[in-house]
Amino acid sequence: MGSPHRNSTGKPSGSTAAWRAAPMALLIVLVLGGFILVNEDHGPFGVHGLTPSVILADEPRQQKSDATGSSGAAAAPAPKLDFARDVAPFLKRHCYDCHTGDEAQAGLVLDKYKDEAAVTANRQAFTKILKMLRGGLMPPPKEVEPPPKAERDRIVAWLDWKLNYVDCGLARDPGRVTIRRLNRVEYRNTIRDLIGIDFEDAKDFPADDAGYGFDNIGDVLSLPPILMEKYLEAAEEIVAKAIVTRDTSKPDGKRSGGKRPKLPESHTRLITVKPEGGRTWEAAAKEVLTNFVRRAYRRPPKEAEIDRLVALTQLGKKNGETFEGSVALAVQAVLVSPHFLYRIELDPEPASPAAVRTINEHELATRLSYFLWSSMPDEELFREADHGTLRRNLEQQVRRMLRDDKAKALTENFVGQWLQLRNLDRIAPDPTRFPIWNTRLRDDARRETELFFAGIVREDRNIFELIDADYTFLNERLARHYGISGVTGREFRRVALTDRRRGGVLTQASVLTVTSSPTRTSPVKRGKWILEQILATEPPPPPANVEQLDEAKEVTGTLRQRLEQHRSKPMCAVCHNQMDPLGFGLENYNAIGQ
Image 1 (cartoon, rainbow, N blue to C red):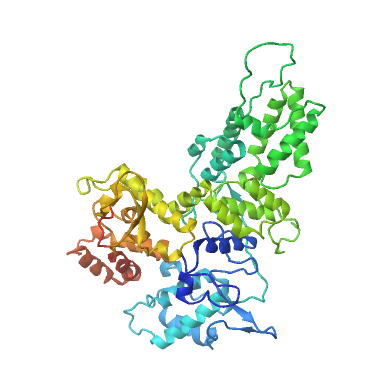
Image 2: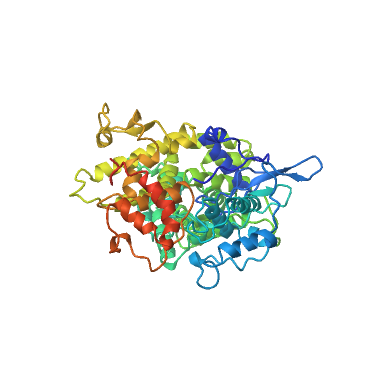
C-alpha cells in the first residue's frame, strides 16, 4: 500500500485527513481510470496511473500550468541545485566508498550516473536512494563524517522533485503493455462463466510464476510446452463435458418413446440455434460461433476469424459429424487460441509502435472484470462496451461488480497474495508450544482477514481502516482465541473492539502467524513484512556472508538483546535498523496472534 496518489490539479490529494477520508470504492474507480493509458508492468493489476487524463509514474506529484502555459510548482518550489555541482559531489563523498565498481553493495553502482538526465532515466535506482536518504539509513549513521542535516535535506528535496513532480503539459508515456496469459484461477473462472462448467482440473496446471509478489504479472506468465499440452487436453475435456455431440434434433412425430433426455445447461448456452426451420448449416454455425467467440475473445470477432471456424465445422460435416459435433471442434479450437488464453490488446496502428492510444471499451471491460472478478466480463459489461458507455458509467459498474459474489475473487487472490495469506497453509506452529492451533482455527483466522478487507471495499469505508479499525469479524472460536467474550456460534459477524491493542490487519491472527517462526515470534519477519507489504519499501538483500541470528555464536541474551548485537554490525544495521523496530512493535502478540 504505497503513498497516496495525487490528483490532476497538480497538488497532492490534500492533507492527511483528506486522504484518510478517501472512500475505498472511489479509490478503485480512480485506479481503474488509470487503465485507459497505463503500463502493465508496475503492480499486481498493471495499474500505473490514476485518471484517464493523466499518466503517473511511481506516484509523481503533478505541476499545473498557469494561463500562460508555464508550469508552476504545486507544493514547494524546485530546490536550486545542480547535479554536477551539488548532487554528484555529495554522492562521491558519502556513497562511492560502498557503491562503485563490481563489488558495489546491493548491486547499486552510483558512479555511472553522470548527469541530471540519469536521475529520471533510472527512476527505480534513485527512488531507492531517496528512500534511504530520507529515512536516515544512508549514508550509514556511524559514518566518520556524516553529512550535515541541512545538506542531506537539500539533496532529498531535489531528488523528490526530480522523481515525483512532472509537467502535465508534456507528452504522456503509458509505457509498455504486455499481453497477459490467463493464470490458473483466471482460466478456471473464465471457463465457468463462458461455458458454465467448473473445470477443477485447472488446479493441476503447472504453478504460475509470480512477479512483484503476484501471479498475474504479464512479464512472468510464460507458456511452457507442458502447459500448452494441458491446454490442449483441457479444451478437449471441457468440450466433451459441455456439448452433447449426438444428434439432438426433435423427433419427426412418427416415432414414440419416453421423455427426451434433458440437455445440460452448458449445451444450450453454446448451441443457441441449429440448421433447421430454413436456417442453413453455415448460417447456424456462424450465429453460434459469432456469439461464442465474442465472449471468448472478450471483443467483437473479426469476420475472417468466424469464417475460419465455420470452415472447420464444414470439415466436421464432411467427416460425418453432427452439427453439435462440428461446432464442438470449432469451440475446441477457440479454447486454445491465443485470443482466449491471453488478454491481448490489438494495436490498430501496428506500424506506429510509438503512438499512444486510448484503449477501447472492450479492453477496458476486460481489464475491469479481471481486476475485480478474475474472470471475463459479464453481459452487462459487454453491453456497456458495445454501446460505448462503460467509461461514462465506470463508477456505477464498479459498485455493481463489488456487490456480486464473484468479487470474492478480489479478496481471495489480491489479499491472499498481498498479505501473504496463501502461505498460511504452509505454516506449522509447534504443537507442543501452541496446542490450540489447528486447521479450523487457521481457516477462521484467514476468514477474518478476508471478511475485513471485503467489508471495507463493499461498504466504501476509509482505506486507513485496513491498519487502524475499531471492529473486526469473528466467530466464537476466533473470539475465544483473542480473549473476546460475547461471541457465540460458528458464523462470523462484525464485532466492535474495545481493546485498542486489536484493530486492522497488523493485529489479526492470520498476519501475525504467517510472519512468525514455528516456535516463536520473529520481529525481523514481521518488520520486513510491514516494510514490504504495507510501506512498499523493500530492504536491500543481506550480504552473502552474514550468519543467521541463530547461528551467530557470539550473540547472547534475550531476543531483543541479540538483535541489538546483530544490528551493531555495520553490514547488518542498514536493514535491521528499518525492520526490527517495526517488528518489536508487535511483540505483544505471540506466534499465533494471541
